[in-house]
Length: 252
Ligand SMILES: [Zn+2]
Image 1 (spheres, rainbow, N blue to C red):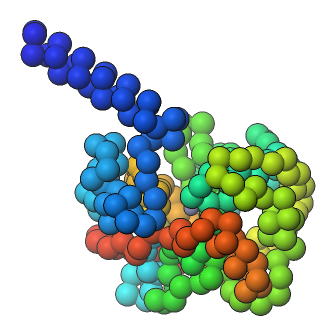
Image 2 (cartoon, rainbow, N blue to C red):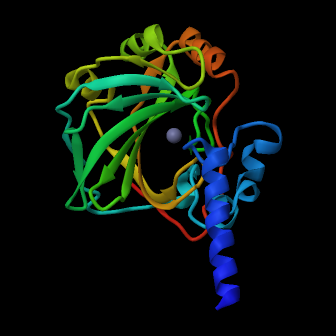
């Protein structure tokens, strides 16, 4: 009993310490040096999936991992609410969405919570990196996640990105109001929404698995100057290295 009590109280203390250090964001992590992606799994016990997980994201989607699905269903989009703010969280620029926008897949409703950016891309297609990748993060009432990934090629300036960059905070942990309409957010995505699908994880600690990854086959464009501006604001590249595919197949 005594031992159990000690274990429990030390666990409580650990959690308490973590939440103190954490300031609400978990143990500190980053993309360079000791806090970099190679060490995430060792930074905190709750980040252990980052090194032990067998279904981690990002991956390289190439023909060796593709498996034909006869009925990869169309994602049903119901984006009906605007964005409310843009946050510089020190790791990325994130746009938070008012509740009420959703997608439906596998018969489950997933609410659009936020979207954010990585440079260069995290996932690869046929071994190729893209200058930028957006992740639109959706959560079900049961806490499951579905992420739509959108790749950007070098080209014309992106109008929605311009609106975001024009008001994004340049200091970490700052928020600015931003109203993008539901129409603008939907128009951000390509008309043809065919996708690759695989089971993966969060690409940041705690690297939790069981995430539905839906990587769009069609791309948006971004100008070199816009990528430069993002990099300048975030101060460093923010993409996790490619993870082993292991037993997974990518449906298309
Ligand atoms: Zn992401």
